[in-house]
Image 1 (cartoon, rainbow, N blue to C red):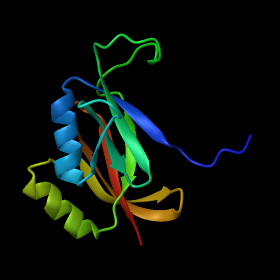
Image 2: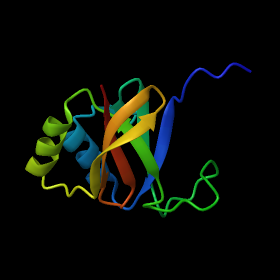
Image 3: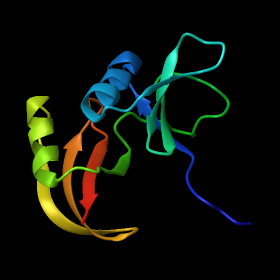
Length: 128
């Protein structure tokens, strides 16, 4: 088997429109609509997608115990850390920790940490 990349991740959330709005407005991620549906359940993050499902949804293809606020993911920004911090401040998004040096898949990066509305932990990083 030759794995090439991650295509998408799915976050469990309590309020779908609020989650879509947060990721679209704060991170400028384009909203993707499913074919033949007016419902928005997904945003584009670079070459990958972030999909959302509600914590009370019962579908056969969901994890055994989906829980809002249990995700921990890192997203890479193309801006300077000063710009990222100022942008988050302008949206009144509290910074939990950082900036700090971390090691990512491509080497050294600088990271800060925030929570989304469902308390998923988001590491926002930039490479040199």
